[in-house]
Image (spheres, rainbow, N blue to C red):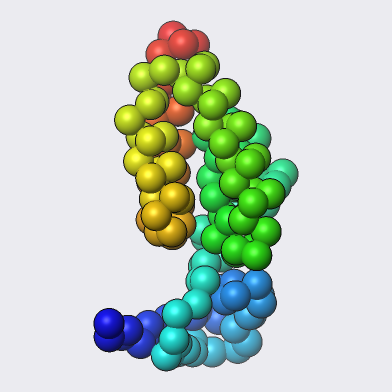
Length: 133
């Protein structure tokens, strides 16, 4: 299995988290080339616990924690399972998306699960629009 290097270009002042270390780019645009597998999240993809203010965002936050802290996967997996159960109970029509996220988590594609969580957050917004209308 050949792993291709990953090139990340950071704007001045932009942050990136790589394997639990937050890196802040200084004055100018810079380029990082990662030669091995690492957990990487750009600043725009990082959600704080305070920002996780809806059920779908809480699921995203838990998946993010699984991604950043794989050594605590049992704890975060348990929390994730509880949130998913509650979400499906409240919004049964979300089952297909939630299962996709769960499948990615189980197979170890946690980054892929994070991307699918964005779909879930959009879906949650749509459902909320219909409920309030």
